[in-house]
Image (tube, rainbow, N blue to C red; front, side, top):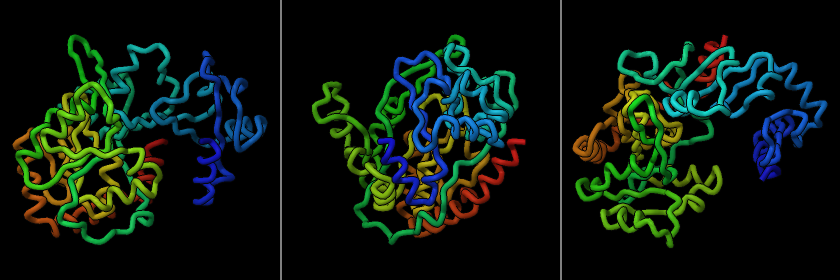
Length: 330
């Protein structure tokens, strides 16, 4: 897997600019001295870390003492609400050592957002896509589904006396009846084994959902891109925690759909206050709203596809988004 990672980077001219640190699964702390390094020697890795202008710590994955090796660590939060609620409850997550705090939760600084700020100032950023890597394909077949690629998982967190679900299973089961209420086909690429005994596969299929194996349709970046581009639109149901805390989360996967000229029908987490909706992006809050969104996309499909690509180019182009993120880091 590690060598496959380097092969993938080499395709983009980045193979010489990467290091992988491998820690033993029983390692109690992420100390650089205990890591096996790939791509660079230990001394080269040490020098690279010590001289780096900045370190983006994605989802607080790097912890002390490794984090202390970097002179300017910046926290990049891709899981708003989930991260901030987890920090006080898990001793192995520390975020106070960072210089700046960035979050994809577009609504975090608004009055209706209930995400704990943990005493820090949070700067927001939009998820982004490398536009040249996503040429707009032809119009999909009429039978192409509203689709998504997601984890079928369980989980919950406590915030004071509230139970908050972090389950994509809960997210989609809230809209179980959508295929029966709306016109068209609906497909999820989720990892439910054919022999799974939970009954979820049968439950979804009896309500009209088509299921496909994500290990096949998203086994590589190229397969993933092809799957999105052969879809009619995305149907994105958010983790309940995103919606209940009004985080403003909007998926980077949804941005890839937009770049493909595919409309996005996404549950509103508060993002509608910060992104244009109605054409290209259609927000919904309940089953009736989702049904209406499907009808609107189907009735005005050409306009939605054009708007989707335009939104990707104007709001989610990596060239502009990354510049804004770097500016927020200082």
